Image 1 (cartoon, rainbow, N blue to C red):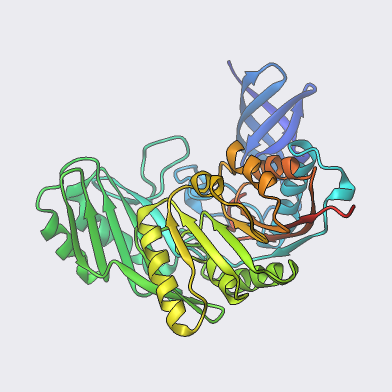
Image 2 (image 1 turned 90 degrees about the horizontal axis):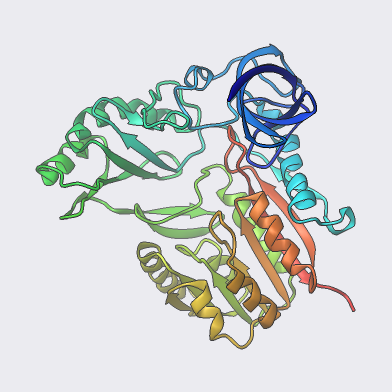
Length: 421
């Protein structure tokens, strides 16, 4: 049953909601920030827990800014869930999210948690996007809805891409409903797209050709055919390294933090001491593989997704021609690789949002590398995984990279070293 109530927000919790209380019952309110007083629409999800969203701001807390994207304000777009948070408050709020997860989910004692270093980012950061295509619009979805939002005021994407969306929507409308994945260079060009439809698209080749004035390349993928016009990949440079990336492949999505991210990985690896044998799990196109190779280690990198695995092999070949050591690339899962490994000095891992599987955690503890360097995009699953490692390792370093301003999402870089005996 739905109820309307007023409450004071105490803090934010993993997942991004603001936590308050109604008659002593915990309420998690989307769109509410610490210090806010709101009127909210709430539903009892389970005994002792209410969830819902803010209907009206009765009093603004210190983290709330004045101007808010109109599409976020009226809940017609769900592209960002912290549109009201001041950019200057992201470090404090997101650090609190991570500490909450480590304390409550991971149950790490305070003395086991190192100081968290925060690296922020401006808006307009997205190199990669996944838009939804309707017959009239191309954009993100409204919260808990299949309605496609108008992105005319979006802060997450570059202005150049935002200005192209209405015309792209018009040209691609015959393929609706569908998704358009975009990938762009750090300066906004080139701009590539991959249109994904779960139904046949009439005259897909003509559709792809029509978009060439707005895109530098478009791949149309349907159950019956794949059609390509123009480029399907580009080169992204970061901190002195070049990465060949296909539009189908995952790559770190914040244009402003790529250099800092790679330098932080280099510093983390330097903290691990001499590295002779290394493994890169969930390697993608090789963003973390590259700094590992720079240590001159004997390296095996594994990636399950075919497009990213192909990019990884190409990048390894190009880096070898640059003078870096050769490395072994495996197309498969982390679980499959680890079962056959007998030794490694360092393991680097960048698992999906769900974190590592029980098998991976078990195999890492069996393998007992001298150091683990972990990237995580979810504080709760990171805290769960970290708690499993603490019997053998200590959490030595923790860096919070704000790859996703405007949202509660974070990227965590951590280093685990063996406990001193």
